[in-house]
Length: 130
Ligand code: THU
Image 1: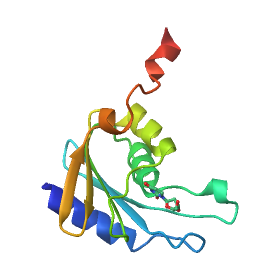
Image 2: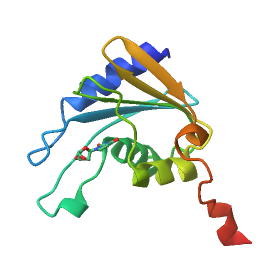
Image 3: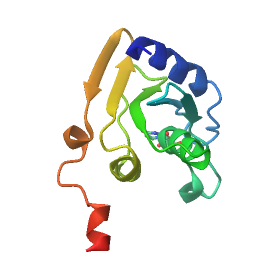
């Protein structure tokens, strides 16, 4: 699947965003190695801390369906700017899809980054087993 195809799916997922508080719509699409796509949008809550970002919605959907091997994550928002994952999502990506290509898009521009680009010196969950 091309980056553009994955971005298009992320944009479609963004339409489902539940954002009565921020009005900030985000969509994500996560591609597994065997070609499945899991989508996500942000889901807000009046108790703001209960809000789930689009990235984590997609990742948790995939993990809960038994997926473990991911190759690409596309993230878009309705704004005219690249939208990068929040700190919590970066840490979740570090644990569950550290090797995936992270794809960001706005207007006609696309950017490919790695986890190390957006979260250098990340906390390594393997330390817990030492
Ligand atoms: N949000 C995401 O869904 N993903 C991001 O990468 C950044 C922030 C959401 C959380 C909240 O619903 C809204 O955007 C404003 O922070």
